[in-house]
Length: 292
Image (cartoon, rainbow, N blue to C red; front, side, top):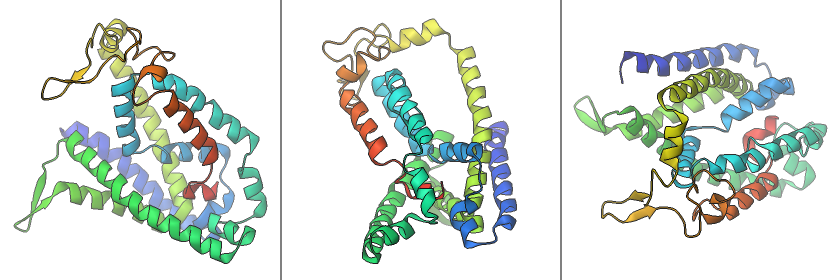
């Protein structure tokens, strides 16, 4: 990476960190720390929630999906995905959120104790704690490896004569930044910082989209995704096909949404239906949603 590349990474990060640091002066109570005093408007909540739901591991997930199922899964996610019609209908209906706000609780744990018992609150908190440990053992590790390989960082860094794996240092930096942001101003800082990050990311997404459309034309994209561009799929080191056109599928199985979900081995119709079911079943169950 050159100087311009590092500037593109460092400048938005510096802006978000500065905004997060400035917002700490507005935190004056426990309600500010836990739920941002529930004074955020719909645009701030929508932008911050959308940004918080998209991380490096989400990008890696979509890389694999696009590699194996093409752009077809994007069509289905317009209806069943986290940014699709189902989420919009759930949000407009006030499902869970309306009654949750009526209770005036600040955390899900508080709601569990009021609705059920203190023992249930401890049980739920323990499950959340241990699942969080597992989560923070996987997500930051995957994100760190992504940044190390994507940016092209060296695998090891010499510090005071000792070699340390770059992967571990990047993971510590990611966790440290997230922890510092949370402790500086709680949910208030997180929400404002995520919203600022979302606004900056939106502009960068548009720049990337325009650049890609300028570099590649539609006929070339169609040719690459059709069986004309990949007649047998990707090959592994031994020359065997890793994946290719499923039996009975059309020549455009990476482009036709009504062909791929029923034919693709990994991301088929069951993947779509399971995702839609979990979207409703687990709606607002993610712990950071307690401040909504």
